[in-house]
Length: 149
Image (cartoon, rainbow, N blue to C red; front, side):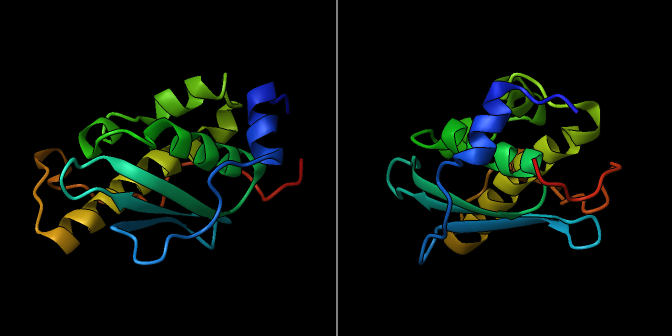
């Protein structure tokens, strides 16, 4: 499988790894059955609704780690509304592409951000209409095993 330099860089040198104590919102997606589990932590400024800090913890393949890493860079310093605009397609583009069998990793990144925003909304009595009806898709379509790059 051919990976872009950006995928390799974010896999070998992931950004924003870790946890945030007392996070404003935490989103976890994936399932142990497929081997990709992604957790995103958000620290959101109450007044400006800007994501001051974001961290992730991911168990999975190199593409899942790279997708997590780059997605945190894409939302750090953005408002919660701007973070909602991050799609799996935007993650794939930011990584200069992913092999077709790894595109589901970008879907996990998008879903983890949204799940963390849903948690933030619940914890802070905030309503974001774009999140109405959002449900995590833990049975996303993919075919892969955990691999080392």
